[in-house]
Image (cartoon, rainbow, N blue to C red; front, side, top):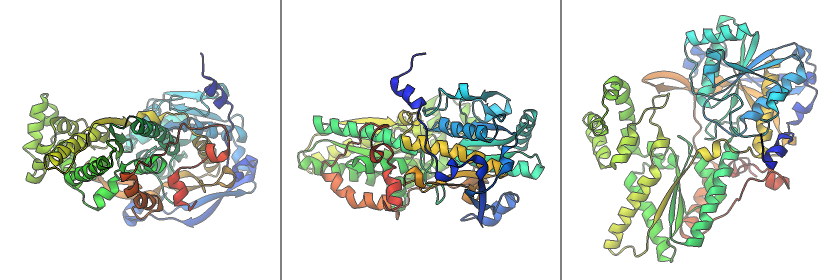
Length: 552
């Protein structure tokens, strides 16, 4: 098969590791730190996870570790949506287990968690792995969104593992996938199955983070990919000088992607969902603020601009959030009756008749297409699929209507033409940046050392990431310390708490200090394409978000 020159060169790239992981693998041991606890719901989480709650943090230090060389079979699962660098997590895991014992075997379960339930796997060896190193995508074994959450499923997992003499599983996923990993680890310990479970923090959304998980893998590559595209559009807008571009960015609930892209490209407007919720901004007030910015720029002779919109915005606008919650609850209770209705207009009427008066008022003023999008099939967690709601088109349309009214009142004299975009899948499988290639490889290598240390229910952790890899630290944190209790499908369940944009944090504060200037003036910056070769400050640079958080 023909491959591109870049792909050929990337196969040969040797990812960088934290210094402690460059030692002989038999010379690295886990050092146990202080015990951990959750920020909230301590008693409830402890009751559900008696074997894995309160475990200590782990760091790796030099020391003799002969036990790590014993023969092991390990299984690996890719879970959830794709993120750049997943192949390198598997590469690092494979190289570590081979360094420990060449007779070790890595089983890649195909198609996500369903692969282990169906005993569908691929033996990952050196020849199979070589064409996936340092590449994007999850096509090495595929991914899926099957949830591992019932005892029957857990027993199938145990049976499949034991049939292959697999003594450890590595689950590469986001918050829900790693919640499943924690539940599975607890079950295996409670039942004495002797199967360890280790997680790796994946999601381009950037919402799986804390003091010890400084960034989820894929976020760096995705935001740099989107920022290149936004920069290109900004350059085009500044050239043509006649379009307002409304760009929706992937990110589900949190606005980390939108904020990072704004810091990279300095658009005229970037909405931050968490701020919208904190200030209780209505849909009308958001539209009015955008329209004012358009009018102000038009007064300066600039009938063009760029607006960034986080994917999950609609769930943070108070009246829309309440509406969505009502619809989610209604459709969960009336699922069979609702699904029996085939006509879209009848579906709209069915829901409208059952909403509270306030939510009905909001629902009826929305364009019909948006109403239909709000009633589409729910995701596996019972939530509206916000990626399908065309918030970009909704805002562009409403801004245009508002500007027409302002023009009729003599408050606006410019010209307004809009274009809409959604950047999502363009970033999920991009060639990993050097940062993600290094970080992911380190996460995988580190995961094996957690296994070799006899640990289970831990998340692989590499820290000090704003520095060069020579200063990175390696270790692990108990997954349970990241949990809280949330209502899912009407039931209180333990889940990893999503990390939203902190309005008091340095990244948002920097953005807030500069956005008024960006709104009026044309301050665009153009990041350009991801660079793989050249000075470290260009090729290995971290995200602006992480640099600001760590005071660089």
